[in-house]
Structure formats: structure tokens, C-alpha cells
Image (tube, rainbow, N blue to C red; front, side):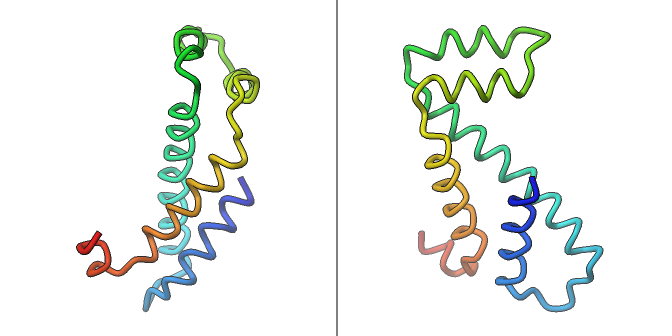
Length: 106
């Protein structure tokens, strides 16, 4: 998590938001981290091979399932976790650093 926090702080600093207090920066960082984690998780699930989806659904429907078990399943399914995570983080950074006019053009 420290790497994500550092990554997000660097994005916030690069955006150069005027008048942002340290408290507001921390709140923004926390919110952005939640969004980024959700996007990474979604990207990892979308990267699962179709033939693994039923087994994955069964795993996450188990009450006692741990985060480690889910991560292990995804890793063993052949998904390149580092590549998917890096790609998602870069897309997140690019989107955040765009100006409103750049977003409108996209």
C-alpha cells in the first residue's frame, strides 16, 4: 500500500492544485487510492481467462475466502499481475493529469 500512496501523492503533486492543505491532500489521496485499487481489481478480474471465471466466482462466493486466496488464484490463472497493475496505474495517472479540455476531446 505504501507504493500506491507514494504513487498517488506524486500524481497530486504533479497536478499542482493551488491552496491544497495537507489535510485536504490526505483526504484526496485516500479517495484516489480507493478508486485506484478498485480499478486494479477490476482490471485483474477482466484479465482472467474465460475458462477460469466460474471457478473464480465460486471462490469469491465463499464466506471464508481471504484476499491472499483471491490473489493466489489470479496469479495461478496466468494473469500477469504486475503488467495489468502497471497498465492500470499509468492509465489512472494519465486521466487524472488531463485538463478538463483534454478530457472533452477524448
